[in-house]
Length: 96
Image (cartoon, rainbow, N blue to C red; front, side, top):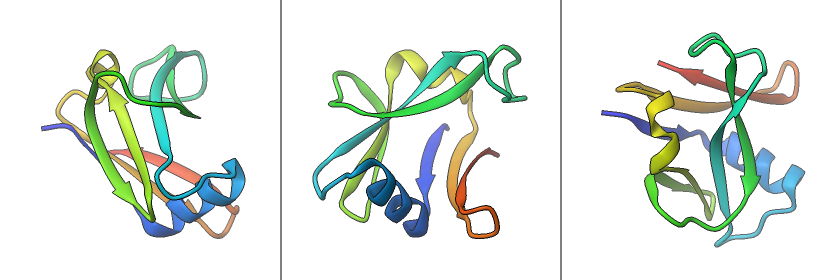
């Protein structure tokens, strides 16, 4: 079953970089283009937004990360794991 996992350092990075507060929502969505290898021609994007029909969600460091029902096809039965990479000071999204 598909799911989203966000490590606390990644959630803290999003809070800092996006100016998020406790109680905010971050939508993970499928977009055309990018460098993702899971589904050629598509990649994942993020934005601050309010959920309308969330299929997956997790709350970490006071922020709820979610994916709408219409975008869950991208994961199939896999897990989206979001982590902070201190070496490049950026986010890594891994689908495992």
